[in-house]
Length: 242
Image (cartoon, rainbow, N blue to C red):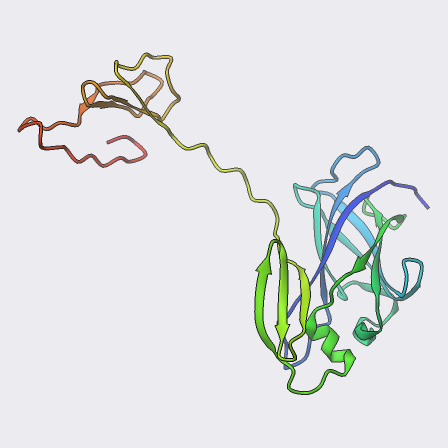
């Protein structure tokens, strides 16, 4: 077995959408993959063997499957447990009321089948739909309220029970562009002041400059109309200036 120290950040989340009044037998799984140097494995094929282990970390695997997926630019892989190539067991036959259960993750960051053990994570919550399908919940039990606190989804049942339904935070989005700034002072702006796209207000003359370009601040525009000091001009700012 090829030994790779793979850093795994995994969080299982469950789907609540029902299909033909039956719980979908799938579990969403996400993990961030790093190689043995700590470098993210990005935009690369990754081989995984995932097992549902019952009782303890070293307990019996009641289900196991393999999948090969492509990591994204952040080293993140997203897949659905229950949708891979089955090694042993039946995902739909798991009795979720007989936990605790753990997810054992074995990964080959090169995309092959030389899996190295990356870790075992306890499933602290199971989707209500999956749990109810095997736990013998009394008929009529329903969801009465849902609430997101922090990054977790909490579900209140009609029995009064509150269950944690998983982690709901998505991927971090791209960093947005820096916004422009309106600077001010009692004298006209010097060329070295500010950044491209900024504006400048001379509070002594009530004149505004900008947006700043590679050619400098350009001509100013008075905020006082020619008809008198009590009449203020209305200016509409666009991305190209006034």
